Image 1 (cartoon, one colour):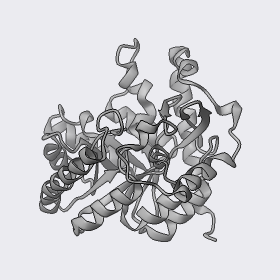
Image 2 (cartoon, rainbow, N blue to C red):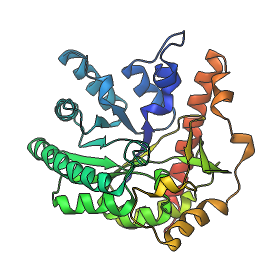
Image 3 (cartoon, one colour):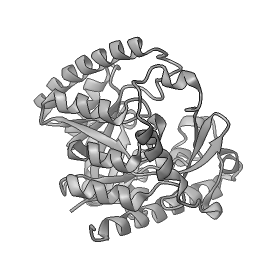
Image 4 (tube, rainbow, N blue to C red):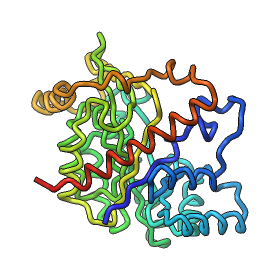
Length: 331
């Protein structure tokens, strides 16, 4: 039976990370975070290795005991695959009883970092080689190493990389909203990548047209433009019951996808008009819940206690929404 939980980043303010590193007030430690995830209705917790690197063996034991006491299954986000520290993260994951480690190769790599197709092809070769190295470590530790679609690889590129690795330890961490960053249809992405998915990030974006493409604003599940029932239904057709679903909600986070610029497409192989139309059709037929829409500026203005309460309430509501989607019968 699928477990439903939360990605730690959904409590970014409570943890004092990312744009909130300099905020005043108390911060959650890892044990408090686990308690809050359980309070929000989660029974799996997806946490980054950065929360464990400085912990002693006794402290790691305490984390493992806390997770067992709360009946929380742990998954780890190992970080960027190019970082040599990821091997250490994989060892810590096994130490904590995790079966899955997620990794990325970058974020929104094209066109700002890699601007030509030739450079991209060279980069893909390097990605494949690095993944093969890391899979050797995953095999030694009997872990699954899941690559996240991090607004970098197209659906087909990621499928081919994991498929061609030909390893029982290879897999995909499917972020259900990120296919929009490469103009892929999220429902089609769930179908194409589904057979390889071993972990998830379930989010919702409110999509707004701009003069250069569109803007994605993260909102609670069900409040945005993503057709989550269709996405979840496709995933359920492919994945095994032991794959967990994890809510990711960075309140108000906004991304600009400037796909109407010529330079956006230079490092991509030609996408068909049908593919692009599928992505646009996916997001243009569903109304955004304006009552749930908060921009990053709106969120950042909140006083300390209100911000803590917002993260917990929205995480709780999104977990309940996701559980309802998973309980719905497959058509």
